[in-house]
Image (cartoon, rainbow over all chains, first blue to last red; front, side):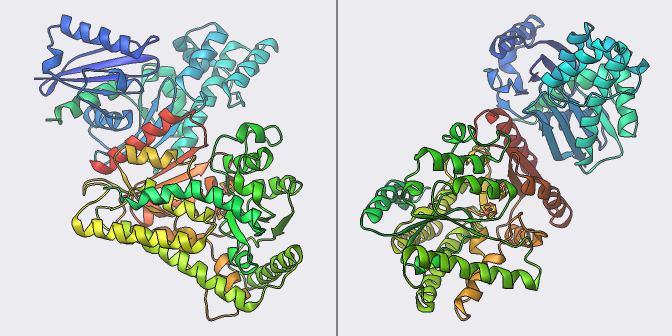
Length: 252
Length: 382
Ligand code: SF4
Ligand code: SF4
């Protein structure tokens, strides 16, 4: 039996396939402009790989979860991330998920989600913010996080993306070096995450999921800000889809 | 199953907006009020009708923002918007307004609103835990009484006050009994219907008629319980909703929770149970009794507001609550700050899951509110 988890986020869609108890495949693709279209591409791709989607159990999550017609159930990304991290790590942690359009902090206790906070309505502190700022500096996100490590510890004070962008532009105008500006940009995100973390019953272990977990420099800077070593896993970007696939396995 | 009387309850909206016009044409005086701190008994004792003008709809907000800042609590903007647009018949026909110095936003908005209609402002003390506060608040009661006596050229006797107190206590008891029906597991009424029935009390031109509809609703709901007919099944997680007031037009969080499969069994907010918990003592001097009752309102405008925690604790136990949701309007400092205290209390003392949702009246974050509601319900179910 195949259990499939599909996590359609605002920028990327993540898919995990379990063959009974074991992960058999993980893949990701850009969400693009239509999540309905994305979910169709995913289905084709799964079928090309020899998986009979109609005969499998499918759970969809993420903001595009309602656009997956062949999913048996939709479950929110909060529960799926919790389930996925429990699988990857097997211990209680506080999960930080920096997504495209929101940042979530999720507390796992005895393997269950007991608390969560979401930061949204505004791009500040999200992946979108980082993407926009990287564009302004003319680099990609990986380069931005690496440069930030070298920079001076300055801060970008505007919480609003639009104002933060003009702040960055004026820093460029003043001749501030790009590393320090990058540092300021990262600081504004890690600072936001840090204050959200403090509203939570904090565990001593912080675990990062989402696309940023592949950026070592970012993890280093986040650890410095939070004051504990932030952990992650090579499959952490798939935490949501892994969780969805596991929950698909619990269906029946 | 939804009680049939709910249709009559819903119809009250239309009926009351006609009745208010008729009452005005018959020369009845109408006092518009904004808050659970407002002693409607004094208005009733002046042979006037008291109505609640608290804005719960997004509609007039754009108009209000021509004058008020955008980053202000939507309830304040909506209330002001109705005042400047003549879109609310209850405001339109009000002869005088009663306001209180509750939160800063309301207080300053009232200064502008007071230019539209005659307004009396009661100076609400900032704490209830002080002997002087009660004495002060009693004097404020007397000032409001004097204001109405002057405006309407009549005398408000103690006898009239006692009658009004008895009437309002009867209304409170009926609404309290209605609310307590949902302590049954599963709940016989949806939170949406409960909200509607509780909220509409503020518009009842004819108090007696309003009370008798509530009594009918109680009867039918009790019959439903004995027949085993409920609004939700046993497995629906039971939620207590606390925080800022809600009404028709600002019920989106309540709706999202119930659409996600929860049964909202208790409304602790001031449009729900908050004002019903304490009755006015009928054996005391009417003014003293009124002052005591209203000062005891556990609203976040007061410091401290531990009475709210106590009330939440009691309701959670009585209603067998599985989780607490704190709704706070954007830019409402008092509730947003207090949410931290409530969270700690609920998680650490009551050992229950807690979620705060901060939003406004618009539909701009419907998706996000839905995710939160669904996720919270999921955590309660597993
Ligand atoms: S929340 Fe407090 S100030 Fe606002 S209407 Fe209710 S009782 Fe009045
Ligand atoms: S919700 Fe908060 S800001 Fe709005 S009127 Fe009530 S106390 Fe004031």
